[in-house]
Image (cartoon, rainbow, N blue to C red; front, side, top):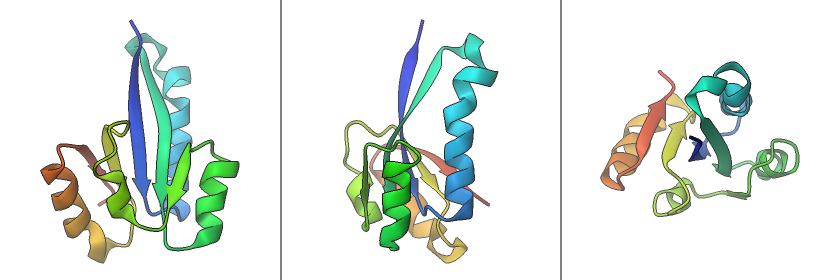
Length: 105
């Protein structure tokens, strides 16, 4: 049985890109799980990174406001790869929105 999991990445610098590559490879390395990650949205304050997420990584959409990801029904997981000083605010808001959280640190 296959299960699609919608991914929202906050911060699309080096670590956000590394996590996104890993999500894309889950079906290759863990086929037995039936998990199908879907790269739904990337949030970053640098416009070129948003374009990169959509054009090169296959995200459905991008935004410069990470809060846009919190109430999206197609996002199950918020992956916080933003700068460390933002982690608490993002993780607490994601939890309050009922999202699963992956926080880098």
